[in-house]
Length: 332
Image 1 (cartoon, helix red, strand yellow):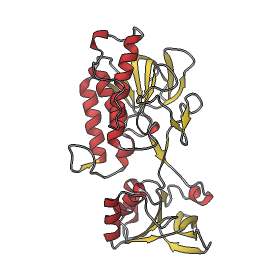
Image 2 (cartoon, helix red, strand yellow):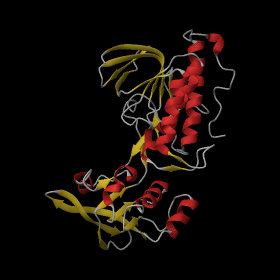
Image 3 (tube, helix red, strand yellow):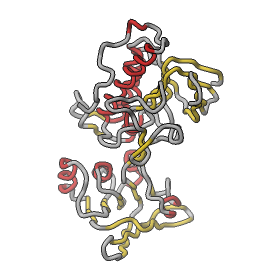
Image 4 (cartoon, helix red, strand yellow):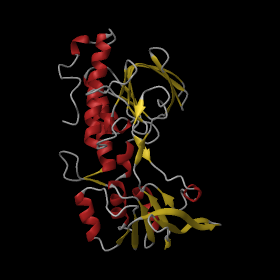
């Protein structure tokens, strides 16, 4: 799919922020192009029940993202399965190269690349990735039916993973380096009531061990954070659930970042440090990191991109500029 594709607004990423931006940009008659990236639908495609999306008491994450994609398409957005590899920010319009060979040329860019799972960085963790070590329970949990599993972490991600894995595992050990979980109270209550889950406090992962031929996990060694005592835990699967980091590879050397790599935007805005470049969702949100706030920021980014294009004489129909406040704070 080589060639050049020109657009007024290029949306990079396809989670709640990206698809919402596509809906709003389409309604503004900007004919946006959305490039889905390496994980179409974003993190919600690797989760199960979503209980905090307004209007749905409970919805499956992948189903919600399919609905968002269909909505964006129905509004007129062009959605392309491709991966942007580089962006030339030295001149406008901005030029983006992709894995498919297509060159995307855009007057404005909305970055919605989201976040990816964090890893501990242990050599043994790296050795067994994909062979017993995972960061996605919904992707790999069914491989461990009737087995004992270890989950590392203490926030929402870890508790949600542990609860989900009880659908398959005979036992789930949650290893946390503190003595108190950072998850929402409703999730902690569910965890405490689940007989399959055992929580090991004041411990951190020291080593994953297993067989080499075939490659596979047999257990983990954890170290007590106060005494240094090593405990051996038999397990066939190890799930690392210590949170996420912003997927900023495309822009980390160009745009201003803070708080561990999150893209900085202007106060009450999605504008970045470059004109015509906007950022929304988990790429910029180090505080809330919720699907609904990501969607709100996607809305903001599209409205601001529309207004910016109009101010620079690049909007197709300047009379269509929305009267809605382009700098409305999505967290309100």
